[in-house]
Amino acid sequence: MRHYLYIWHDPIQRMLVASGIEFKDVIPALRHADGIVLRRGSAGTIKKPAAFQTLGRQQLPALAHEDMSAWGSHAWADWRGAAPASLDADVAATLDHRGPLAPLPALRSRFLAFAHDDGWYLKLLYAAWDDVTALLADVIPPALGTLDLDALQRGGDGYWLQDGTLQVELKTHDIDSVLNRRL
Image (tube, rainbow, N blue to C red; front, top):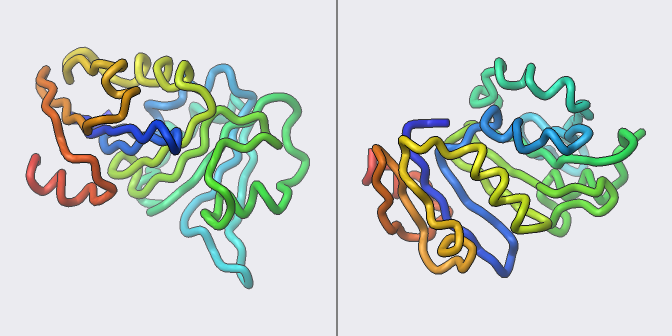
């Protein structure tokens, strides 16, 4: 976790946007998943599709030691049950940001995430709000401040947490504009 957290929620799209959460922070929330499907780097093109990896739960802690911000962008979705033998076109299109954006029923996923410069920008789509509250309980250290999860769930405002203080912030995908003002 970075030394701050910027976060907002769109309840209609079942989407969180955040800055400050790194993939290694999310690993504890994936303890109930059997693994993830991961796309490193850019989404690719139709002529040259992106490469995907299927990683089992036991392989996830190793990612905490990787310099994921050097990858630029990455996307992942958790899966439950048997490891996917191959990725069908719907899964690949979704992770390439060309399909419908929602957790993937074929994988029985709870989360679908798109990140840029690990910890800088995270768009997290979810299947159930209870999974989000469990994830955030594991991710946000008390030293950052206390986030009102009921207010976040309603989706009215964005929030900035740093040094034990919570402040209301604009909701935007333009993370740079927020961080340039705040850091």
